[in-house]
Every structure is written in structure tokens, then in C-alpha cells.
Length: 81
Image 1 (cartoon, rainbow, N blue to C red):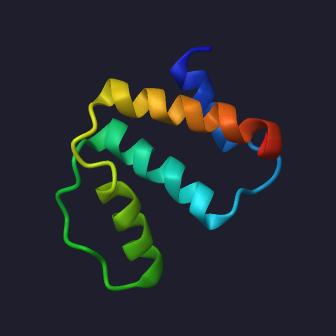
Image 2 (tube, rainbow, N blue to C red):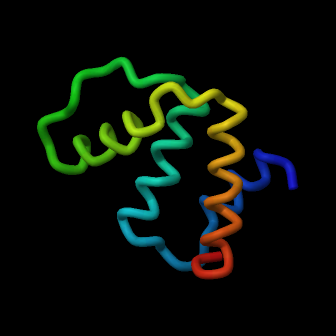
């Protein structure tokens, strides 16, 4: 399956994943599309959680991030898809 199709299918999960699963996808998505994080950590809890998720992927190449995102999709699609 093509990566853009996986992105769309992830966005269309029929069940909402818990926050920790969402943040796994979020960190990889941001790393794929924007590269290493280069912003200050937000003060609010939600922003800080997203920041930490993205920061945890720092240094990951686009190809490695796409592979990790695809693996997450394959892991969670049977549960939330």
C-alpha cells in the first residue's frame, strides 16, 4: 500500500485511538513532514505532549519515519480501523 493511502486510512480510523497511540502517529507524521523539531516546548499540557512525541523522533530520516508509521498502522489498524 502506498504511504499516502496509509495516511488517509489512519485519519479515517472508525474508532478513536487513545492519546498515547495518537501521539505515536503524531510524532512520526511531524518528523516525516517537517523534520527535526525546532520550536520551543509549549506551556500547555496538550502542546507539551505533542512536542515530546515529535522530539522523541528527532534524528529519524524520512524513510525510517515512514517505515515506523507504516508499522504502527499495521499494528493498530485491526484495532481502530
